[in-house]
Image (cartoon, rainbow, N blue to C red; front, side, top):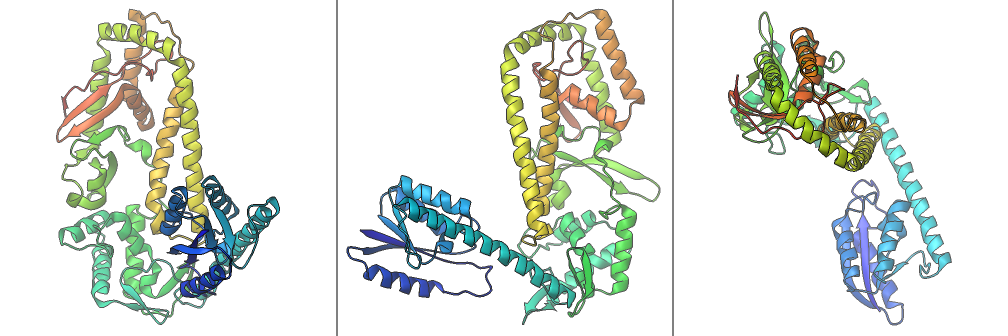
Length: 499
């Protein structure tokens, strides 16, 4: 019988009871003690057992499916997986590949029902042990933070670890001081600072361009004045600060005044009427709303996501003044819908499509609802992992933002599909109906709130491609009765529009 071995140690375990070498030695001795067993392939990973996405584990399963060995041997069941679900998945894959599984220290025959039950019970204990370990680690981190010690996690820029304590790194500390000095005067925000750092050739420790969120995280982090923060509590630290407390407090006041502090930031999503509809022609990324603060006024504009995050190093597309672009697009949408003959023809065709497309609408609605459930589940898992201390805020913030945008867009689509399910399949377009619709649009353009104008834009445009001062809007066509854009109406083509 050809026997393959799998060994693993976890990088998040402080005390390794058995090294990889010790596991190999014991597995080799166990194989030699069995009649008819022939040692074969060896697989080994150095990562946590909470995930199945381990390189050598996946290679072992692939080789099992290819028939390269007859039995997979581990030193203990928890070396293979630390969750019942993960263990069951691996055993199922081995069963399908007709490969046996054995533990050298827990000799249960997985070929029998009783043996398989005992292996699964060991998986339960392994999962419980991992959960207990996490609790102990988090409690230990809290105790370290309370004593002012570095509690681990992602190492802050500007520091290294020496004998378990934080020590400033001279080259990085100089850049940290520069960032705080640029912010202290209130003349430069996080975005401008990040752009300046990139323009000067600076990069983060990982070699990526500086982003405004990274700068903001640094400016908010009390680690740089010698304090230690953990789970909302701040304690006096035992390490040397890089910036003075006076400078840190001055920067904190500037962030609050500029609205860059999370505690005072309000939801301005409805302030940008074309948000979510525009894409940059250069890089195809979405345009996002942003603002600049002058001496007397606050200037709103749209900017490509990559330009917003990394400055000209990300994208060279220019910014667009929000007021001018918003007004231009609304007027352009109204002008398009004034073409009554085009509306009549499009409505006739769209009614035919709606009648034939209701089953597809229902199918898409179910898929969108399932996607919302999955995305919201992912957000909850990230939040729970962060609360458990398994990941840092800077490690999950960007992904959470992406998921939040995804959920928002999915919910907007869900609302459209819900409404599409109620559409009439036969409509009569009259001059009075067209005139009434025109007046409603005009009233919204002239007197509507930003949120109403944003909703109107979503009903008039499918997408807008922005190239410099030229926009290429793809229009929708209004449906009768409900006075809202039908999601099954065939959109118009792109038409250039200067603003």
